[in-house]
Length: 285
Image 1 (cartoon, rainbow, N blue to C red):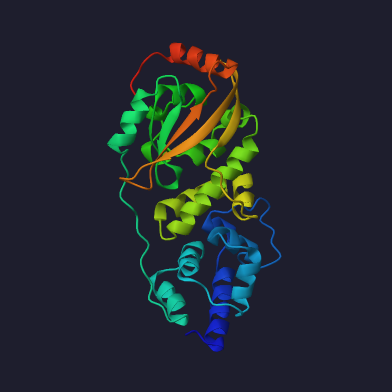
Image 2 (image 1 turned 180 degrees about the horizontal axis):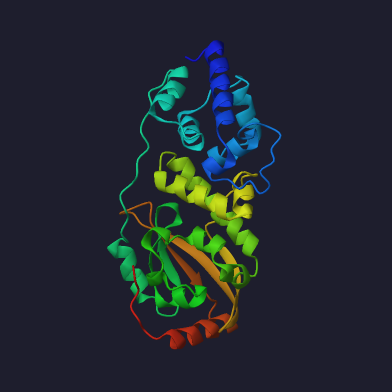
């Protein structure tokens, strides 16, 4: 069991390491380069480790013991080498487990069969960390993204939300969609704190987009897995679509996301128009 002395030493180690780093070395923006403190601020470490500032402050003060998942997050956030990682875990009487880069996912055949049958409904198969594993022509038409032209490692739904300017005008309420995507990604991080792919994604988006960085480190919200979205589509006009998620027993980390229009509605007519506009190309992965 971790005693008070070890918790105090842990806090000292975290403060010392924080002082050795700069925003640039960990991929955070630092527009003016003028800082009142040496190294990283506490709130910056909290953002990188996906923990509240209050929780991280208490950790540095030696008032609480960290979980294994938080230790793993701190290893990544503070860019610790192997010796530093072992020392960090040793302070709380734990052995360090190396983070793992998981094997690339492939869309499950069962989900692909359903996807290919959806000729009027936009749909895509999402994997770990909201990676886009497969999509149908209607998804390409709705979002205006030809995923065949996107490098495979960058085929990610939340990456598109924050890096593609079209997304901010396509969604009538882009902020709500973006915040919900972050909440879903947080759930991925909680389930797989040692996932290097997820850590890389969060780090890159934190650097590229100030809103992502702020919302990732802000108040957590419960993610929604269904609802209604309104799109301002440049070809089909306004589309009010209900979205839902279908799971996969063969691989719980995959799900089929569909955007459905109510029967006999103007949005349904809009999807039918898009369907005739894009043709009948097969889905891709």
